[in-house]
Length: 87
Image (cartoon, rainbow, N blue to C red; front, side, top):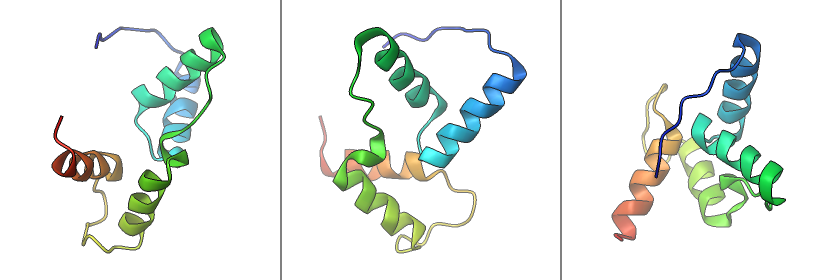
């Protein structure tokens, strides 16, 4: 996977970060999904549209994993997924 450098206005970056935070995804995931939708007519599926991801997110939000405030839930979901399904 490649990394890219893009220039965005401060306002657009703030709005993107807020949207990513509200959706429970990373900024990169949000931008990749938006670009996919724009270029390819992508499905527009968000990470939390996956029922397994939604269930994990709800368990995190309910505090069933004992996470403290400020813990990045997306990172925790990935960590849990990778520990169950090594590739």
